[in-house]
Image 1 (spheres, rainbow, N blue to C red):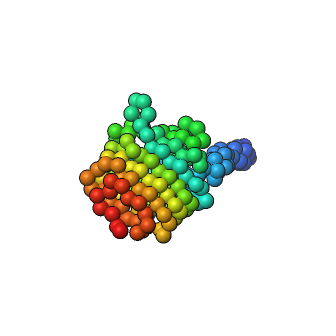
Image 2 (tube, rainbow, N blue to C red; image 1 turned 90 degrees about the horizontal axis):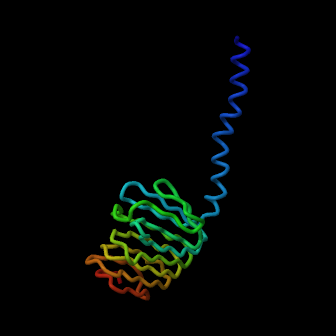
Image 3 (cartoon, rainbow, N blue to C red; image 1 turned 90 degrees about the vertical axis):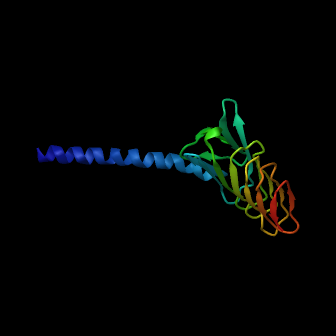
Length: 176
């Protein structure tokens, strides 16, 4: 009886470990190849760029009110979002989003969300960046010494931090 129990444990253990390791092994190449990742928890969406990727992020509302995010450098869906293809992810209903946090990281990146009705809090990181946000009161940081362009495109209390050579349009408060 003891021998049969021990044999069963010895036979099941490698199978159980393979079941745990295989999903991790399969997930790693896709995550490593992604130019960015995005996740959603309730009404909060979080986007982060991968180092060395030149991101071109576009945030839209697809038919049916679905929040759709594309990144031409590729994007990987995290919790609360669904992978559509290598460059497109959906993250539920746009109407339920109150806060979109974005970190563009290094390189010269672009971020557009002109129809966004939710607050965008964005750090453009380093590089010559172009940022366009929507009608909510957004907070944008492009202060990096590089030449950046920011279009706050609505809202009544947008705050943009940048350098003296950056261009700001439609931002109620900006420094400088």
